[in-house]
Image (tube, rainbow, N blue to C red):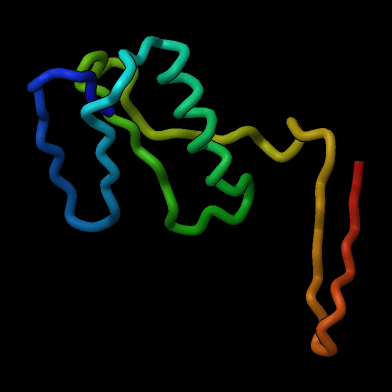
Length: 96
């Protein structure tokens, strides 16, 4: 995540995908940073993450940079499980 300025820090890694946010129309504050991280955390499945991780680097505030984590499964009100059967029907179970 980069502010609207010319300070660019190159990140190096051996594999993965990098997404750079720059040249924003608005100045981002701490609330925007938190909202972005919370939104990205939703991509992380609580149990079956496999080898999928998200690292956020903010050159404006390096001490808040780091790996994102998600809520443990018991922090949600509902759990949805869907099973697609061979005949194309779907069985959906909702647990509260």
